Image (cartoon, rainbow, N blue to C red; front, side):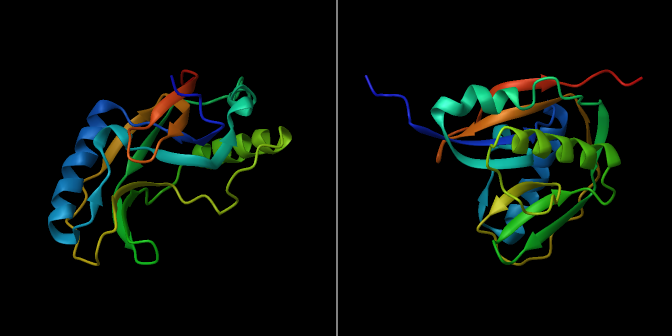
Length: 176
């Protein structure tokens, strides 16, 4: 029997519903035909809110508690533009209009992580879903708007070469 890992690679994210995931996966296949690279597995598609990196396994409960009680308002997220970042060779889908509620959610989540001294990436928040890695510059097909109703924030464990697994979830509050 193998011992539990001492460190886990973690991040907080939004997880698309099945319909949004399927539409993103279909567009990814079309983009892959032009840009090549390595397609993200459909079941792993997500929008990162806070990347924590390697975290001591003993702190997982504390990390999960950081989002406990956070108000996650239900809102519609619309991904309606795609692009290519040459510096890391990623093809992505993003929102041309970022909902203010999403910016507020990220700020509150990061403040809660800071309050618990949980290290996380400090880069400015650029909401996107990574679709292809190791891609090449190419003309990308048009991306028809993909929307999903945000229903939860999840804490995710990443295992290289494997699927991501949700280890904690904070449900959204119903829209008033």
